[in-house]
Length: 231
Image 1 (tube, rainbow, N blue to C red):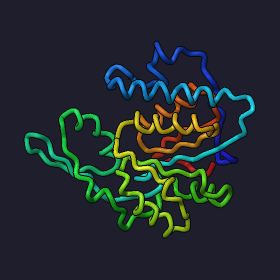
Image 2 (tube, rainbow, N blue to C red; image 1 turned 45 degrees about the horizontal axis):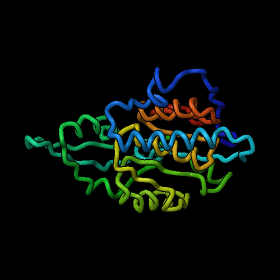
Image 3 (cartoon, rainbow, N blue to C red; image 1 turned 60 degrees about the vertical axis):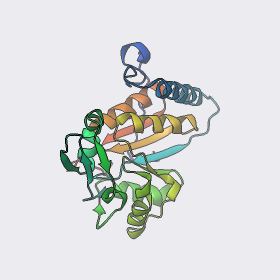
Image 4 (cartoon, helix red, strand yellow; image 1 turned 120 degrees about the horizontal axis):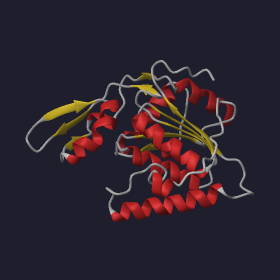
């Protein structure tokens, strides 16, 4: 987006519905209401992406933990058998589905705030985009609960990036599907140039398939500690 190393993801002639789920989303284990929600999001995204007269509209969506910020907060969980544990941001995303299937109860008390966080590997890209385009189309897309938005906003302000509170999205959902649905929704709203950054490969894969399936410009970056973000 805007010279920040974006590339055009070429549309591949592929039957996404039958061969690879819907944009790579496995639908069989989802509830009927969620399946209908996804089909509706897909239809709107496809319709928007095919508009010949659509103005270019770019956005950035970055994960928070270990991407925009280096954090230390944990999610606590307890299983029905009494087993307890704590998860950092990466572990929460990686183990969320497994723990939900085991009927774990989550305690987000610590995860609802941001304390003593440092700039993450993607922060400077966000800062450059802010300096070039402003912050209206910069979003933080986190698996944290919505209550964490104030703490995330405070973190960015401390480092000179004043994000709108409504642009900080707490999904309270560690599934890759949750971020994929949100991106589909934004494409349906008219965004056609998307930069997505996340440290969880499954999230990146889902969003990349959505970009390919809709044929819009964009890049889904897998952020690791060794990622070169200069381009």
